[in-house]
Length: 488
Image (cartoon, rainbow, N blue to C red):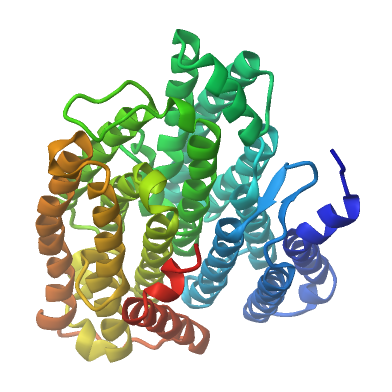
């Protein structure tokens, strides 16, 4: 096995750009930035962060898809590179949301932590070894825990960070124990090598325990039931840009990482859900998690009066649909899963961007705060309509084609006669429930009259551009879905 450090350095150029950007933004704030007011410091920090993210995107595109590097520790295949670009794009939009959110006390530190979190997410997208996967996951997670609690004067932010950290620490312990059992059983840490060893061994009781522990860690990262309990409080209390990053880029990178682990690495013990009686493996467990997430997320969202919490329970429901896409990777490839996760991330970042602007200008995140939004800010109302209709799955927006691609892929597993078909049918039926609570948002924003004292809502230029770009990408991805699906 030939290990090239030059190739490794080239493969990690995007991460190097992000880390360098984090160091530069801190250096600026410690020197020149101290002499400027807070608003100028925020603007400069965001510009440095955006430049680092753009440089990372350019580096990713220039690298191409060279395949396995550094002895197979990373695999820069089309899925990894597409996920890297997707994560970086969502991070860039998050920086735009930050420009229009409530001012931060320490903007440079916030941007630096965001860049470090994104560097962990991009490594997760390409990880092909247990050790690299866990280190990248923890780099991203630890940064996100701090970002969730960054509003130190807000008790809700502290509660969000504490719950996120405690659940995340427990999930990391389960995941690491599962990884250690897999290594003990196979003697390998590379996903491809693990697959070769399991092809000879088959499913054993100890491996079953390992699979359960890995799925616990995965369920936390995906905010899937029954490991979702942190999500509503984290989405509710975290600073709005932090919640946007957690809901979008983190989910995209997490699903890519576990797709790599579960199919290329543990595919030989996947089991089967194509028939009425499932075959034991991790696929039946994923199907159960999908069904539980769809039920809990959609039904609990009906009772929410807060837009943040509604988006949190919506995220749990979407995690159930994404789990269906994960289960169908063997027959449909990673295209439907990636398309769904990426376009869901765009809509979620945009929705949190609207929430950020409302909160900054005296409003809250309650649904009632959306009343008369179409008169107070046609830009916000129009963009919110695109995001919500995409989340609801209305054609010709990207959300519709994402759901269609995932559900069609899941039905290829055995039609309606098998367990996969039943969960897919449940997802289709619950889409009607989701459509109802999404319409509640639009009713408030487009139909309900504004309060008598409500005035116009100004939108920062950077945030307005961010919202328009997110909405435009959703429309473009819906009109030309094959541009993404054909990447794989």
